[in-house]
Length: 248
Image (tube, rainbow, N blue to C red; front, top):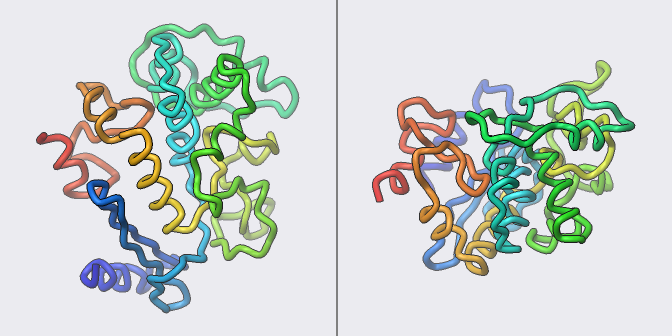
């Protein structure tokens, strides 16, 4: 971890980035180590910097609800794994967006990473399970993880671009999530690094997530909604990502 801290400090120099946070998870021992660097200070105690989790939200919402409820539905699994033929993206109307998403035919298709698939799955799971989707999601998350709509201004959030010419701080950096103004499964969760790490450790301990992912892995990109590395030489996750999983 000392070497990782040093690399993170070097990375921040002249990067234009305000903070870095890293966690190392040990799923076998149900433990983790973490640190964050903010304003030049390294903090390895309770984390306080909130990061926009962006599309990681999809895994913490749709995938977690899917696994926690042990769902087996081949048609909805197409949505989960972005193979349902829905458009990748489009600016949804504030009123009638659910009807638009529900109007698309679900049909087996080539993989196309799709925010629309994630949003449609949220609607389908809420209907299938007969429960409020947001409530199902937060049953599996550390209490410090929040929807951007639930941030109260006391959190330290980083600037993430601009909206209407003003710095975007504490608001989701996704046009649909922002415009719809309600909880969505494709984007909008914010979290400190230790809360994210604890959530992953606890969920894996309770539902044996790693084993389920590995047992379902094949040659498809997505597995139970989780993005996997299919080409170790061409991945945004960085050199070495997924080597252990891919070789087991």
